[in-house]
Length: 120
Image (cartoon, rainbow, N blue to C red; front, side, top):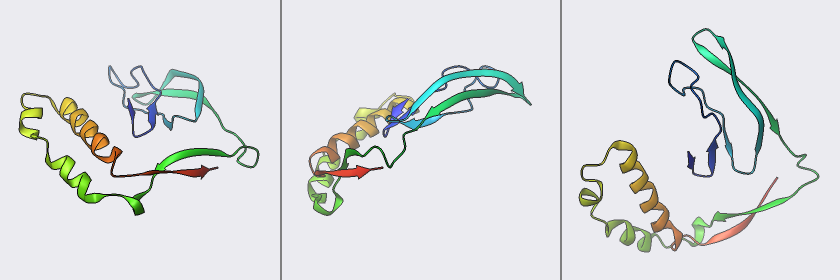
């Protein structure tokens, strides 16, 4: 899963055959040595280390949406131009979510200018 700049690091079952316990980070954080280990109750334990940087030694700049300068009419027009019934016909919930997510990402690409944001 790589959605909204989040990355899911657990790739094996943590309860029965299901992945119910998650470790999610932004893509600029590093998870090392993640392993699913012994049981605690009816869940497997997740062991990992998180690599972080001292915010005083590193300054990162990333692009963020500039909502103050956004063209909401263009976004509304773009989102209204899709026939969602046709796009999502006979699709499961996950596929419909991906279609909607991609549609919103496309619709917000132009109306929302980006600006540099200093992240510590």
